[in-house]
Length: 144
Ligand SMILES: [Cu+2]
Figure 1 (tube, protein in one colour):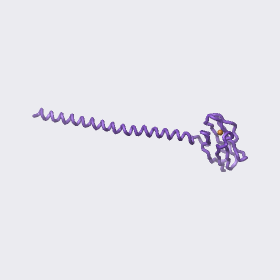
Figure 2: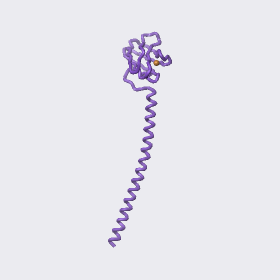
Figure 3: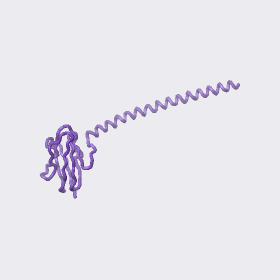
Figure 4: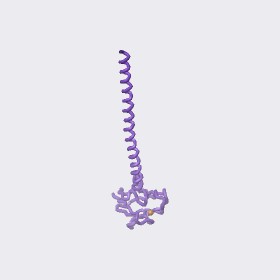
């Protein structure tokens, strides 16, 4: 009788072991699905990043990126006496050229990676554009 009980216990233990193995297997399957979802969402976020790259690019304080035929940010407000630095991140030349007839930015052609700095010593609104691509426009607002 003891052998029979031992055999039953052994079967129960084996069955329990199989049950654990099955549940682990299912858990693995379940965790595979979120992993698939994660990789999908990772792809989505990288897509978001690439679309972000085509838009505004993070810049330092008082820095304006020229990227993808745009000034970024296209509108900035600074205190009088602030120096703004433009950075051309495109592979084609651009300029930052004032178009209000004021004492605003008037850069030479900036090649890729070149920068231009201008200090705004007058309060006012300074519209500017790229002299090579006149549809590229932006504005700097200078306050006291
Ligand atoms: Cu341009």
